[in-house]
Amino acid sequence: MRRYDFALLGFGNVGRALALHWQERRAAVAAELGIELALTAIVDRGAALHDATNLPVAALAKFKQDYGALAAWPGIGPALRPDELRARGVEGVVISLPTDLATGQPGLGWARAALDCGLDVILADKGPALHALPELEESAALAGASIGTSATTGSALPSLDVLRTWFGAARVTAIRAVLNGTSNLILTRLRQPGANYASALAEAQRAGIAEPDPRLDVEGYDTAIKLLILTRGLIDPTLTWDAVERRGITDLPPGAVAAAQGGPERLRLIGRAWRDGGRTRIVVTPELVAPGDPFHALDGAEKAVTFRSDDLGELTVSGGASSRTGTASALLRDLIAAAAART
Ligand SMILES: NC(=O)c1ccc[n+]([C@@H]2O[C@H](COP(=O)([O-])OP(=O)(O)OC[C@H]3O[C@@H](n4cnc5c(N)ncnc54)[C@H](OP(=O)(O)O)[C@@H]3O)[C@@H](O)[C@H]2O)c1
Image 1 (spheres, helix red, strand yellow):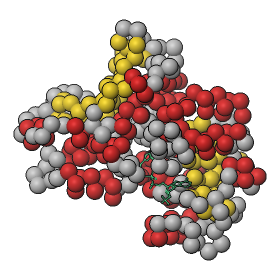
Image 2 (image 1 turned 120 degrees about the vertical axis):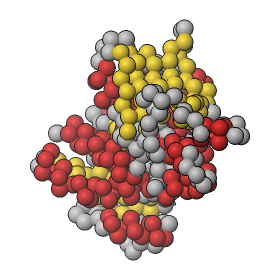
Image 3 (image 1 turned 90 degrees about the vertical axis):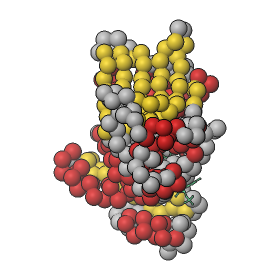
Image 4 (image 1 turned 30 degrees about the horizontal axis):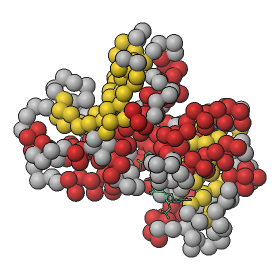
């Protein structure tokens, strides 16, 4: 049995969901795949705990939930750096920190330092992928390490590594997608009598699927970032944020939701990427979709993506609602792949 020690950086909604999901699935992963995934360290704001044999994951999650910080946990130490984790036998780190869109920090600095000392990096935090995925992939290749991005592009939807294999030599020419579960949940709830924007957003926050700063969801940034990561990986590696035109559901004109309520069409926050002459464009904007459109039936926090390619035609994947478990499962999938790549 191959043992693989990993650490969590960030013990918020995503970090805790992964810790609890790992605890539930670790025996099955060991029995079915022959990989013993061991969560041995948690690094949160200003605090860290390492225990190679028995990290009290459920109690730590409850403590952080109840008190908002791990600092008062008995025996907790100061935050550990990547090299200190490596020295304790850790092989991979899952990064789930709030994203600063302008810089990709603090996750980007962490990802670089982790790869420099040979750790695998699994990203939930989109900042590092947005700013430096090609660089991080190159560093990972040089270090013989892996980089996982499943949770940065829609968790339950197919991840970039799978898509690159899937399309092979075929050229993806366009992507159309609903990628933000929180916005779709809000638009779904607003069709119901008596529903309002604030309570729908609060529902997404209670479910742990909203961004730490929910403006990233409802103003279209989250959709644009996910689409930019996918488009760079599949269509145009040179694409930058300047190519993005973005509006969110907060940009809908007054009355647009009410006007859509009675009719057969549905409002969706849609991102499109396509080649336009010599350049690639990304536009994110709320749109009305007609019955029969594959995005019409999306319910609540569900997402969907359609890829158009020269050899393989059009392919739509839909469902995969945003959820704590969905994100945790995507991260676990990346951890399994990273561990398998080391065996
Ligand atoms: N929620 C989802 O469904 C989802 C899905 C995919 C990806 N993501 C991404 O995952 C990331 C985390 O999301 P979340 O919902 O878990 O956010 P969150 O609940 O705010 O958790 C972030 C955690 O990181 C800690 N932290 C902040 N700065 C830190 C630092 N410099 N060093 C160490 N720890 C630090 C925070 O501590 P404090 O509590 O003290 O602030 C908190 O425990 C975000 O980038 C988000 O975009 C989220």
